[in-house]
Length: 260
Ligand SMILES: O=C(O)CCC(=O)C(=O)O
Image (cartoon, rainbow, N blue to C red; front, side, top):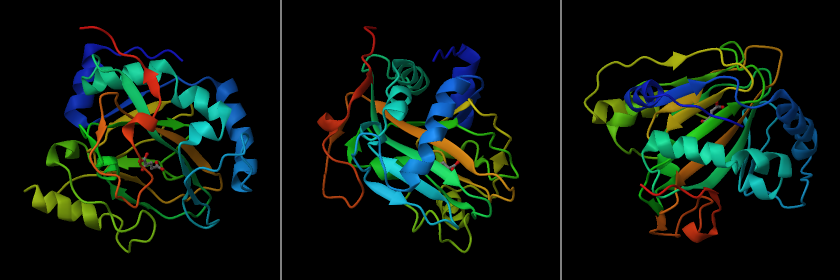
């Protein structure tokens, strides 16, 4: 993959907390990952290694996640691609440290799957310092608004680090926790931004950005791959955590960094 970022892109990312970069992942690579999904849904992984978190309720948003690169070589080639680590380092302003992959999720919304609670990814990696995170969400199908495209509260990465949400799937009001965070940050009303995202597009978002996804009102599955990338100088401050994160040293470099 090749990701070219202009200084305007970097500025836009830092202002909004999100940046769409179209036409990055080649259709042939996407097809290989999509072809693996039926097996993954049956619990069959190419290497035999099961990821840490598997949520595959057929009527809800499905998430297969953890160190997904250890389970699926086709996914590994994408998540650990140095270009992805380099792009995140430029956007996150950590080029001197290089980048590590700390998490990856396959997000699948079958037809009818409800909204995904608006949340902050950085709240789930708070056992690492510095708590700098960029998520690269790669559309593996066209993510139309009708099919439940990702939703973002632009600028909400400036609200600071909030709490984890109670559940990504079971909220009566999927915006409730974001409303609380906005109130706590002294923000009045906010708007939710969403758009049609073409297959192969990478949407980078700041780990502090509040985001979720809409209901899939279409007849097609909606699939995306998220890659959570942090600066390679992260240290673990606590491993007493119910989530899937362990020692920082366990996580692979995706890009070695550059001398500045
Ligand atoms: O678009 C989605 O399915 C939501 C993705 C998401 O919440 C994430 O990447 O953290």
